[in-house]
Image 1: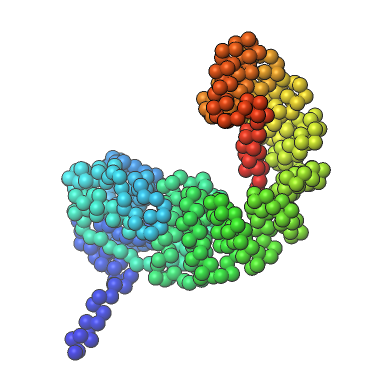
Image 2: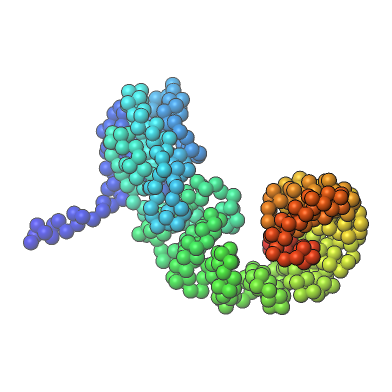
Length: 523
């Protein structure tokens, strides 16, 4: 019985200091070539890099850091150690050479299955093939500072190189390290920064957050923030379903976490689940009634559902809160869109003008105002508004397109054609611009070029019955009855209606562009 009591802790993991001392002993004893793998977080790696030379002052220690993918390690090492006396070489950042080969979805990564490679990463192939050169040419102890998943790569994808290991050491995290690492992951400018990251960088960040969520020293109070951060990252990777699951976990732990409810609404909105997204925004607003971003997004989705009065009310709730000027112009702009949808054009113009008082260089408000002026038949003023938008954003193709429409309405066909050409410079596959250009060419009696323009429409959208019908009209005006009938038959086949009805139906194109306008305008 006494023997059993004395052995009660045999299966417990070693203490952090014990693991660290084992590693130091191994490094002190080792001379010549050796391979050591140290499993640690980036923060632990940096602390280890600073501390090791103090612990083993008799050894010459150097650090080789990588911040991007490499395919060949031998050459950088050879160049780095040339004419240097080095006993121990620490290598950090080899993970960057592995991320791009991972072919699983982000969802599978979040489930912890980060080892599905369609091919062996070049760096691991290289290490397998060059292990004898490393041994023969470098009388150095190599220490690879890696996360756990990277060591798995070595085990499964570089077994020849890994088999020569002198030791594998896991440095368990401490509460202080977990706190420091978690704070670093949460210290950011906003999730918009994640959109700028490459896929590989997103994978790196995702793994860091996952590691911190599963650390035994992670506090319950910190987990909701990390789960929310994970959801934000997943949204930027277009993994909205998994993001929602992450936010759900966050609010399960902390039901009054308004930011998680809000971001959950964003993910639901991205999936087109507008009612559920609105409900999520409303949960955020129950907790934080002055959350103007939630009022704004709720308004956007209500507008998307055609509930324009409710959308306006939502924007006006946000305006009562008096958010900072950086955000205020967006609210006036979005209110203007909803008012326009209700046909309350004068009020819409006033709303756009309020946005422009705050942010005169807000091209979307200039464009939205122009579109309402166009609907009111105030064409010259509409052109002025579109041109103000284009001074600010010269490549804003919708403003060029609608400027062309207004110029056509004024009978300025050449100017309209030039405006459509500007659209096509920016967006060559915009079949609506090709169609509008064809229409303007017909009005200027340039039938050959009009036919060529409609042909471009049909290359991009072969089922565009309006283009077939207008081509038929052009051929008829040229006296080419055979071609006119052939094209007319194509239009009839597509519509299953009489050609007289086809002639009236530009509405399909109009509705497509109208949807596009909404997506472009709403903020």
